[in-house]
Length: 219
Image (cartoon, rainbow, N blue to C red; front, side, top):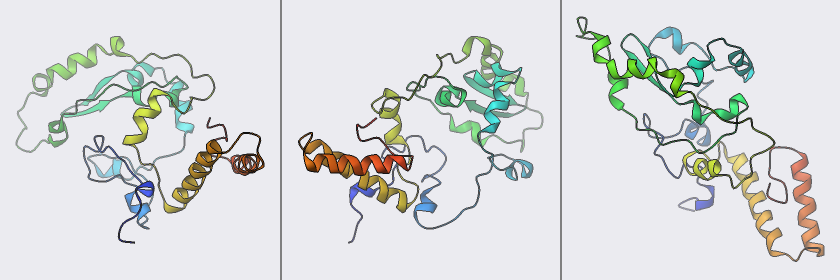
């Protein structure tokens, strides 16, 4: 075949969030390449050597006395550097109910700032609006109720997230997902209680028992 069927396109369908790169990082995994562990994106060699750890870091963050620094929506500053911070996109990491996040107007100029030829620049004046936003961080905290149970598959967040994310990381996960989606579609076409319907439902239930896939009722 000259082209893969559209159903196995790994995504994202909407690339609006890829502001600093052409393809999602996992594009390499899809193509059989191994780029090694993820590292922190920074402007120093020290940051480049820090690898991402597991979710135990979230428990440490929750105990931090500076949670307002973490949950404030806006920009973080260090001398001439400014990084946008949007905790409203990762509320589930803090056990909070996730809603569809606001659209972000991203200023690409902030990532092109360096100190070359700017030794005498007054960064307090240069970044005055961002400093003002930082000073008002207590008024810009993200608030959300605790997440109770699982989010429904038709939640507004998922409807926003699916087109902008990578649907598949590798080809094996794509094969499994396509098989499950086809069986769910077949289940909806068969008469409830029929021998065929019960068979497909048992197959899906067995797959659910392996973990990480939707239940036969679509939840």
